[in-house]
Amino acid sequence: MSSATASTARTVPFSPGRLGIVAGNTFLEAVRQKLFNFLLLLAVALVASAQLFREFNFGSSELKFISDFGFGAMVFFGSTLTIAATAQLFFSEIENRTALTILAKPIWRTEFIFGKFLGVFAVVGVFCALTTLLLLALLYHRETALMTANPDAFENGRMIHYGDLVLMGVLQWLKFGVLAAITLLIASFSNTNLYTVVMGFFVLVICHLQYLARDAYGAVASLPLRLLVQLLGYVFPNFQVFNLADQIGIGEGIDSGIFLRVAGYALIYIAVIGGLAVYSFRNREI
Amino acid sequence: MTHPNPVPAIEITGLTKDFSLNLRGIKLRAVENLTLNIPEGQVFGLLGPNGSGKSTTIKIILGLLEPTVGECKVFGVSSVRVDSRLNVGYLPEAPYFYRYLSGSELVRFYGRICGVPRKRLDERVREVIDWVGLSAAAHRRVGTYSKGMLQRIGLAQALVHDPRLIILDEPTAGVDPVGSAEISELILKLKNQGKTVLITSHLLAQIEDICDRVAILDRGKLILEGAVNELVSMQNRQSLIVDSLPPAELEELRGWLAARGHALTAVEQPRTRLDQLFLSKVSRPQKGGEVK
Ligand SMILES: Nc1ncnc2c1ncn2[C@@H]1O[C@H](COP(=O)(O)OP(=O)(O)O)[C@@H](O)[C@H]1O
Ligand SMILES: [Mg+2]
Image 1 (cartoon, helix red, strand yellow):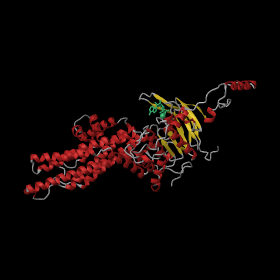
Image 2 (tube, rainbow over the protein chains, first blue to last red; image 1 turned 180 degrees about the horizontal axis):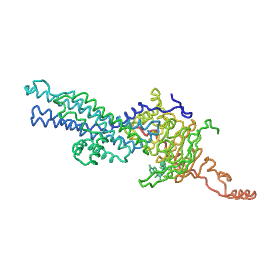
Image 3 (cartoon, protein in one colour; image 1 turned 30 degrees about the horizontal axis):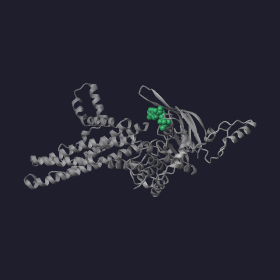
């Protein structure tokens, strides 16, 4: 042990265990507040729309539609869930004054914030896993039906790379992790749940569209504007990098090197933004 | 009384706390130049009207707020440090807890945060819940608890790691007289176990009976501090209580006193305090609420 000062016989080291307890409790709150009921809604929407496509009878390109549509729904509902759940699970601690009781215990604020993050990340993880599974089941079911109906179109076997779909699910999860960290950072200094949610969506839009700004202004605009766009690109993560392929799970496979690089990109953003959230939360008057 | 531990449980020196109310730098001074020592083993009452800075002081002691000026130590460790909270239990003002947990899940959660060893955790949780009298309701969700039950589960959560110092912010506010008498009893039990208790209240009479010392705050300033006995007793007067004295004999007594140069200042019917009357008349409910 390092040289301890006289008055402190026991110091309190950073504890992953305590962090895990906070995360577990956050997850439990989400479960008991029935945040997952929302999933049911999504499942119904997905199955119903897949049914709808069948009516149109697109043939084999129908699979592409289901896959694109499925991931579109996952991104939309997942982003909403991430922002809403992060803000809700954070502000319920502040508003119910449970944050007072817990932070009056020997716990680091770092453990509290990262515990909250991990709890939300787990909630979103369950969401991503279940939607990906549902999507895989839908696609598999439909592909099998199409194969028997139209064997010629499938002479090289199945068209869908199911493994790639799982990788895409994982990437969406990581992206939601970045979004959760951003929302937590906003929550750490803002006063209301609503403000946090609105700002969260605002940043989400910037993260999704900043590449457009870079493409549009990168070359032509005046220098100050160009610098601003550049700066935006460094400060805000580019959510476009998480869409590895135009046609998800069909056509060219996902390169594992690129997959790992994108995953690393997400983890670095989570660590940095999470660190900023801790810093900002340390100065908050509870 | 001698104190085995020379380090005070709480040592506040020259503490001032300003809240900035807006961005233009307008500030509100919630606590002003407060110096206070609370020795170990006492029940200490921090009194004052609403808004006098009691809760703010407590939050600084717990490291939830940082002082603007001055410092605060708990058992000799600065309260900005995490390890100053190892031996402290805290019941916040008007507490709400995780509504989706049951009483025992809640206490268990805080016990784990405080590092109660897993082997002893279940036993300890049962022990403290029993101690505050909530065994019958331990498996109900905290969201269904009454106000008095919330205070008691709050007390259980504050005690789960067996701290040496317990800080209670208005533990009896909004609780009926029976409930607050029970909370007073629990506090006296803690004192008998040798714990230090810091309790705040704006109802002076209620905690007069349980505190060894009190400090009175007004608009953030300390206006009075001392031992309760010294503060409330009037040293130069006595009262006599006599069974039904006829008027003639009373006159005789007056004369007897006057002959010795004493005046009989007042003759009154002794009255019981209303809260004591109430307590002796109402029945005490089943602990943890009726279970049907
Ligand atoms: N977070 C805060 N921001 C601004 N003012 C505050 C804050 N907390 C407390 N105050 C003010 O500080 C004063 C003292 O409050 P408090 O310590 O809660 O009083 P008490 O507990 O004695 O009723 C009050 O005037 C209150 O309005
Ligand atoms: Mg108060």
